Length: 298
Image (cartoon, rainbow, N blue to C red):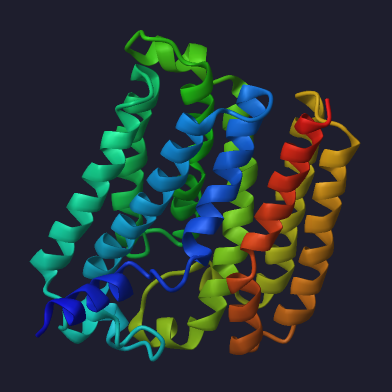
């Protein structure tokens, strides 16, 4: 196989042509970074978190596809993924993931000790997620923590000092950051349940657990409830942190998109559920835009 073909396989493995995955990670992280810094955080932290997010999402794809390769063979949408099809070997995929994760860690090393310590917890949670569906009724909750961990890391990078230890993390990450993480977890539960609804029939045959299966006929109601908890919690926390009407306008734009998503998922069609999932990053962007514009207008 030519070098160009190999690179093409690697790009397919890390979902390079599907940026929605890393955008779902990026917008809440940048929102937290702007809030923690009370505005534009500077180019250094911005580049660290943008490129770190892309790298870690790509590394996560490698680990996830290795862990799920036997399951993915039985799902039409995932059967031709490079690891599942055998085009990329397990060791090769893990090596690529390790290189990407190491590159992300090099970026983290340019921040401060509390953020470096938090990065180890973030990595552990990211590696645990692919296996959670074997033992957890709603593995999307584990994904929610993994996809939200950029929030405390952003606060830590903006507010942390040069000390090491748990006390340093406690000083750098205020309670509101952890509450924002919990609120964002609800958003992840919403959009990843939509994603799970796409594969529900296949997952039932395979025998793995997902939120779409656990919630059963209450799946659509639960998704809308998760959305509501996310937007309500972020609205309340944003206001408590001094954000104003422009921020609330961003929340309102996000809520309008959520209402549209309901029309896409209410009949539980695969195409509708997948479209809702795929366009969810615009919900996060609306919230981020509200945060950034509100702080810029002060």
